[in-house]
Length: 428
Image (cartoon, rainbow, N blue to C red; front, side, top):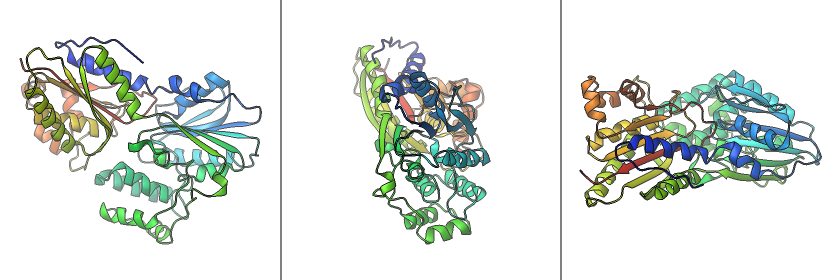
């Protein structure tokens, strides 16, 4: 996908926002789902799924196949109109009763399918919270407590989802096993480092060898005390559906969108517009402010090596940062990264940046992220804003809201993780 953009040094924020929009468009389910579909089979087709992109994916399926039977669960505000597939909205990132009720209905929908039937599973990021049916005697409220504790601890999303998988009755291949003996085709939009289908939405269509002991160790490492039901279930070894389970013998999973592809779409457009591009990676993790400090140092070093008249350089990266919550402000990993980056750059001339979540939601706020530039700190000072205090309070969204520097596209109906871009021009 080649798009021509103008690199205008007087309007870098518009250029960066356009690149973000391109990255999102490259993962639009209406664009990527239809080519991945086989011809509609003659037998019964049941569409299921979960994630921030799942409703849009179902909409794309029906655009290609016509009305279908089924049920998918998406985040509140991310629904789409479908003729046959029922769309249920539920809470994310901490699950709620709407998600649990819908998940149990979804599993019942798979009961009694035959060998000639097809289950089309539409899976995307966010599905770990939206597809919720606790295992064993664990209650929804107990699972909510574990999830909330992990989210506040600063634990990497991979570890959080690993624990979610261990205490779920539908993740780790269990959803696909419930569809046996029907054939299952999983279409997956990746928001995880490495794009492993087992990690996307905690792998509801992918077998899992089980590692309850590791889950217990991770809970202890991040200071989360599990309820007794969770402790006893994990101590007993859990109940994994292993990869060699015969019920998974008729499952195929296809990753149809991934962070690297969206970064490359943005890179291609930037190169066509005359910018040099350096992709730092699509799977960067860690504390948002620490990554920002490292990338600020890199940007300053790259600028120091530039000569007058050199073409702009764009640093691109993706992945999913974390925030260890210490304050009571409103923030998210992308806005916190942007704020920490602005502080670390110290108003360096010729450097602008954007950091946004491609699903349009950064943390718990209905904001994708923020843009910064050489004037960010000076404009904050005029308004009496203290960036260091905002960082300490984890109030990055409040800081950028006051500056009018938030990026708020609304639900994008896809999710290929974070998008970060730093535009560097020679020093004036």
